[in-house]
Amino acid sequence: MTATAPHPGASPIRRPFTAAALAAALVSLVFGLLLAGAGPASAHAALTGSDPQDGAVVATAPKEVTLTFSEAIAVGDGSIRVLDPSSKRADTGAEPKDLSDGSTVRYGVELHSGLPDGTYTVAWKAISADSHPISGAFTFSIGAPSETTVALPSEEVGGGPVGTVYGIARYAAYAGFTLLVGGAAFVLGCWPRGASVRPVQRLVVRGWVTLTAATLVMLLLRNPYTGSGKFADAFDLDGLQAVLDTKPGAALVSRLLLLGAAALFIAVLFGTYARREDAVEKKDLTFGLAVGGGVVAAGIAATWAMSEHASTGIQAGIAMPVDVLHLLAVAAWLGGLVALLVALYRTPDIGSDAVRRFSRVAFGSVLVLAATGIYQSWRQVGSWSALTGTRYGQLLILKVALIAVLLAVAWFSRRWTGRLTDAAPGEAGKDDEAAEEAADPVETAGDVDPARAAQLARQQAVLTATKKKRIRDADPERSGLRRSVLAEAAIAVVLLAVTTVLTSTEPGRTEVEAKGASTAPSAPAAGPVNLSMPFDTGGRNGKGTVRIDIDPGRTGSNELHVWVDGSDGKPMDVPELKVALTLEAQEIGPLPVVPDRLAEGHWSASGVQIPMAGEWKLDVTVRTSDIDQVTIDKNVKIG
Image 1: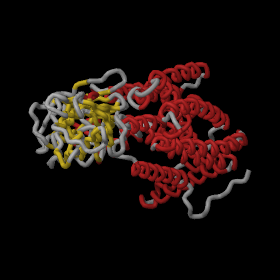
Image 2: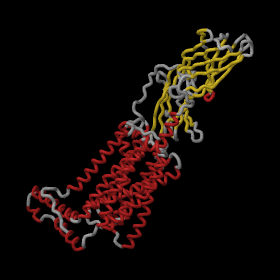
Image 3: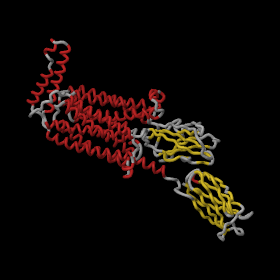
Image 4: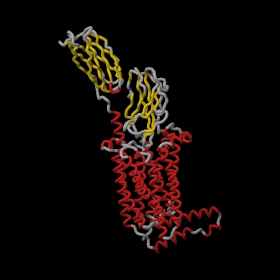
């Protein structure tokens, strides 16, 4: 087989570093684009209602303010604050009360008695059940709206520099887990000799270091990430203790403990296992390491499943083990792919059997990914409108498209794998001798000055790398396989980034349900109210009709007009006319309205305040003599 000589003047060891630099640039570009399009705090629970409602004007001060959410949340002291127009606390400062009932998640805070009229601001923050911080604010008014001096933070909780660093740590944690689990699985299941190969060892160890460092960063930043947003609070011991008492904090600590067990696994894999030569003993050790490593890997994956998307929503008991399988399949496929790429570039003598075994492992991983991914997609999206109309659904479509491209490239890799052959023993021995000869020290190096010796050492390194590259590139099938695997790895980098962003994006099903709950008015009305109600006081000339217009028929200030017509259809003057509004569903009212007489049979009132949307009962009292009167009522819908 003819070997192609390297181009004169070119460094034969540059190609692996070029591939690494390309991958690093791709990672930076993808993460940058995804971070640019992501909000500072992706809300996975959403505020779906409140009492009083946002923008409502209430006649009397409420005793408490309640907030309703789309899913379970965690709250603490100061999670719900009510501020008066002068920015002073209007609530009692106690921890929010849990008023949840069944599937309805509701929390409330008590207010001080005797609150004056004006506009009040409700600022809230909480931790969603899937570990992500959420926050928001709204206003309501007592009596009438007023000016307010309340200045709320412009940055949402979970944003700013702390949020950016926390997000990067999340990405690094997923990448480290993929390299650690995928690289170790590649060694145990596909290429046992790789346990003694330095580049593969470094890959797995770096995966462990990355995951451990990222987990520590997330644990320290958890308090400022969900609270103040200041890096200095990362070392607040009280805040750290509070984090340890939460589900995400417990998951991070559990991950660190499991990583201690993973360190022991790595030590045995690259120590005792790599040196073991007896076939029977090595087989037994392989089985033991596979079982132990599988348990540790599943445990680490469970720290995500138990604290993020899978732990909340519908069918959580099924979703969590499915999520563990999904993460393990991702690691086996993508992490093993990176390990294969390293082996192909840095150890060209990797056997064709190892490549074919990984091909089968990758195929099995894809099947598991397809099954678990379909279930997860149904659970998190739930409808076509959520798939196409939400950020989560759009990212999911992008992820599926990337997987399709990755499978297409993998098909070419399988073709190269089918053509792959191992070098004949004699040729391999000659190539090894040539490489060893090139690696021998320069005999005359000791007789020259240090500068000349350094120059000779560099030439020797180039010569050694040239020999290794010649061995590596001597087989066109291996060269083709390396190129296709490199393309797979590049797509896998993008796929992993998109998958990581998905974990910090509000699920489509939740977003659609929250929008539906928050936009559905309690009483759908869109425009002025026009009523006609007959009456009969029972006395002489006691029959007639009351006509009422309420404009614009929405919450806030309205114009009220009342016309009274006699039985003959002509305007009719009556001694007394009273109007009252009652929202029975919220126990508001009756709110009296005393209209002024404008003309014969015509009364009006301006600035009638209707504090909340809903189905109001309108009571009209008509008195036609000293002793004859009647009260008639009708339900009207105010939007």
